[in-house]
Length: 129
Image 1 (cartoon, rainbow, N blue to C red):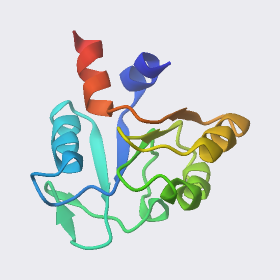
Image 2: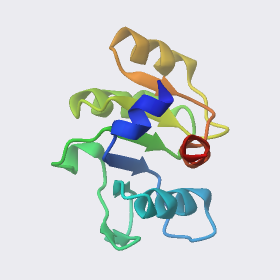
Image 3: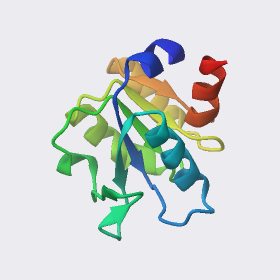
Image 4: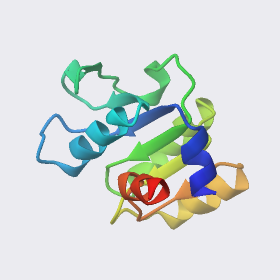
């Protein structure tokens, strides 16, 4: 499932993409952009991160989003999930160390692929060999 979604994805929203280059979210965003994914930073401040327009939430993005990657505390996924459904994203991905089993259940119930506690960058690198 992961390989199929990553191979077919084009647009990735990154919730919590930090402007700080030392943060994992920034490194992952740089990597995904370098792999020709169109990334959409979601962050409460700043107008631009990694040379891209910053959005405050998923609802502000007009493009179709394939994957929503979350770099926030696990409980934030509860509030985020309705936006994931509204934008019809195929996958909600919680990065390494982030868990939310109640949202995992909701995702399954609503036909949204769900990954938690895995790094999208590492998984993508593993696919490439």
